[in-house]
Image (cartoon, rainbow, N blue to C red):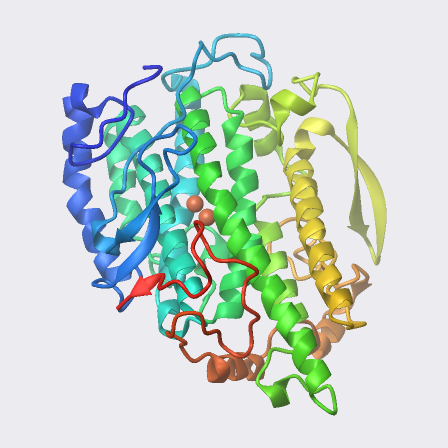
Length: 473
Ligand SMILES: [Fe+2]
Ligand SMILES: [Fe+2]
């Protein structure tokens, strides 16, 4: 199965040849109503009958997914699209570099691959659940529409992963597909798999942090899986990445707009008091950045990881841009220098490169976040503010990995737990912060109008002006 034509007229739009694959097609058609039920119960609240100006993927070719129209979310055409391959794919990661990529799952890697696919898949519906109520407090129709675009695309990513489970993992895969609709973000009895996907995301500062930091984690995980020797997984990730880019745009520019507004309101107020003007102060923005960034760092897994080494050796996933950036795809030589805690201080330890694959990916992620933060700081400079946003140290506020058992300042200094607790409300959002955010987030539904705490974007979407009616009631 290399390239199949795009079939848009069947129940499940796809380019994976479902019409000629009755077993998988029937299994997915049985899953479809369960998915729609989940969407109705756990998808965006309140707007099921509104017309939303959305982009729907109609093919994988450039332009094929840039198709905009008004659609009601439950009628969105969730489909299965894999990037076509022109020629046979070659493994370019790990011990089997140079051999033909797998078009089926090799028995010895079945469990590990299933775990990778399920873990990735689980994040997609989780984020929709976390963002479920945000439509009620959207700062504009532009932002409301962007929220829904992100939500329907996360739904489509779930479809892509469930296709892989049904097609390549037999009965186990079908059972996993069911469980993906049964777990619930934040539910103590049946939580989503990863920590960040069980945190509440109930205000728009959190939403923009989420799409900035958590979706960006998704980008790097997908980029690692795009290098996989399991070719159908590689191809599904490639197409998801095109959609993910928009989610990152929403987060990065959303934060930039809040930051700009914050600086403007500080200037307007005689005492520089942003909250007195109904805005979000930079100290709170910094706390939200500290919170979401630290939770996202956990998503990359342990710093010293034999699992990561095995996954790399087997070719299950690669480094960021493995094929373009690296010449030695086996990574058997070389070390990574990592500061570890010994007694009451940090000392550098050298670890074999393959065991540091998680840390290498975390490095790429941190660099990308730092680039965005620099942009925000240029906005602050433009607005005449001397305050700057920073990323906390990768050791700060961690829940997984070698730093999780210790306490650090945002600068990365090792401190006693009592000192961390005493500073918690200065470094992380407090209950008072949450209450304040809840109080200022009132919906703005007039076309072209924006809530006071956020600046308008520079331009509208899909060639439409900012005043366009992106959501019709
Ligand atoms: Fe996604
Ligand atoms: Fe996303």
